[in-house]
Image (cartoon, rainbow, N blue to C red; front, side):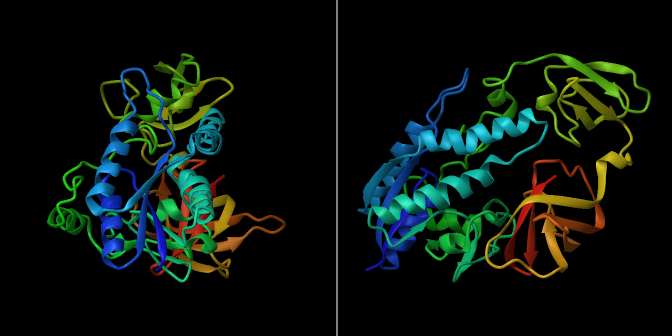
Length: 347
């Protein structure tokens, strides 16, 4: 019997994942990954409640249950990376790094060493022979967050929810009487629950007031608590009030200045060509040509010509339609039909 370790977060998706695999005849063990336990001012980390919920479902299903403590590795590989990227003026995605470094690396390795044949998670995605494909539910598809996983890791991975929609998943959980069937999905940063990125970063970086400057007139329009908290295209949180809305079109980390404009057609806001670094292919590198790309989670797919930079591992994308607010440090993910090929980090 194939032994599968299921990453159980205490939510409905991973609970149903464990239930379905048990029904399908797998020898299932639930595993709670203890990645983050730190409380923040005014915000209690929900890890203990999530652990209790995951354990309760495991008891309901009559499966073994373990806790893997990855807190140290998580802090170094995910949290520190995120903080350094923000300090450099970029906009990273910690969920992508969590999948690359923790769920499909450390968790997979630890599970296999502990006797598992495979791992499984509640991600909305599909995998066939190490090839990553989009989920049936386009609204919930999570391949964007999985593009840095290796094909080798995916060969040892199951995604049972990839063929279902979220409403169906909730219904199936309810039918099985799972304790977490009605539990709300977690929001915010992957490891700190409901707290926003600004509140989280404030614990690790000094809030240094600076000027918000109109790019066109060079006039000082207002002040901010730190350029680190702003990203390209951002509209909310500027507190400039009155008239047309302002958008962030740039920032100078050394001067701690944020530049804004009311001009939605400002050239800085729109990109027709994008360079990608830290490029990762799940399987083989694709040949140059036309592919679909996604510039952020939930963004519509758009097409681009993919070319390789001479003398480097970088990729150049010539977008068929200009895209707005393509921020340095974010990821662009590349598709061929339903297959997720990989992607890279915007230079």
